Image (tube, rainbow, N blue to C red):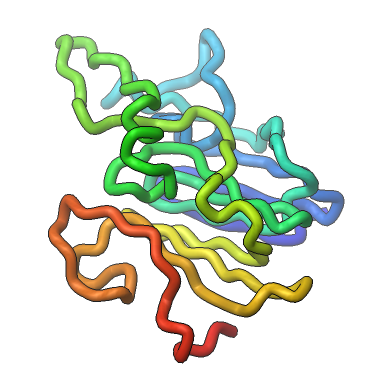
Length: 193
């Protein structure tokens, strides 16, 4: 049975009581965490927008999936062991990987006219965010260009972590240029619920 569901702009995900993860919708940039298959349906207006119209199981590398969050073009999940994973479009640092790690990710294939997006780094399947390894993550949240998680339980103090685009104060850690990516704990005085 479903225990939690999340909806992004063009994709959705569901965690089940037994720890499985199901996804459906647009597969572009790896946001579903499932490799594309020949003959997948695609949006006639954009051949890059392949999709799965029905729930598909994700081969999740962690333990049992506890929570999942769908952003604009990325997905986050945490497992019952407190590890956090990210996949999909990495632009603006929304996946939580460092700059060098992110730039080693594949770029999207050129479109039919040979044009390509030089910032289309993407993680095609769930990958652990190693910078948060050792912190017990209990919830994940995904915005359009940013990501958050909540730590706590098992002797871990409650804290909110934020990363991704910091423009307009989106991360709650101050104003930074639009190209800046940060991963930082919120002020300890802000209560996390």
